[in-house]
Image (cartoon, rainbow, N blue to C red; front, side, top):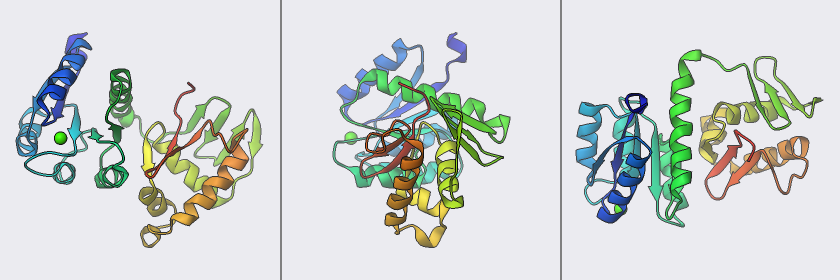
Amino acid sequence: MKATKPLLMLIEDDPQFRLLLTTTLENQDFSVLAVDRGREGLTLARSRQPGLLILDLGLPDIDGQEVIRRLRLWTELPIIVLSARNQESDITQALDNGADDYLTKPFGTAELISRINALLRRVAKVPGGAQEAFQVGELKIELTKRRVFVAEQEIHLTPIEFNLLSVLVRNAGFVSTHRQLLEKVWGPSYVEHSHYLRIYMGQLRHKIEANPARPRYLLTEAGVGYRLCAEEK
Ligand code: CA
């Protein structure tokens, strides 16, 4: 089993936290390459080609955001960012720069492991090409036929509602920022029009959710964006 587990890179300057995370991940049979500086991480990412990066945003040498920007110039390496509490703008910026997911400190190790495995599964799936259909709970979406069903009943969506839902489906299980959704659904000149998103997400929830005020599928990530639930809890 060990040989199939990819190398994880951890960039974290807090020594105690770095040691704790390294031990936790090694106990899960991951190999861990842990460093405390962003520049060192950038160099090692090239030479060691890790399968996933866990990146603390607050680093002493270069900003975590800069690490993401530089990596995204040449690699699709999955990135999970770690951020302190109440720093939603940092999280949003990191996701817009190309990070795949985030965790807010403090977080449980079970949550970290589940995010890592979800990202590794997504990377493994990519060569399959375009996704045809998506199902979670009673919600079923046929992407190519542009049809949506809840409990076997077809739901009529407007083109924009469907486009918004399909962007979330393609990133199911992961957060999409307000900016990413606005850009993909409405276009680059609409990235500041977050009220569009609120209105259309409200409409989608009314059509899809049994209780729109307590959504099961279309989840809000406060201050950051939205996440389509990928598996029922
Ligand atoms: Ca730090």
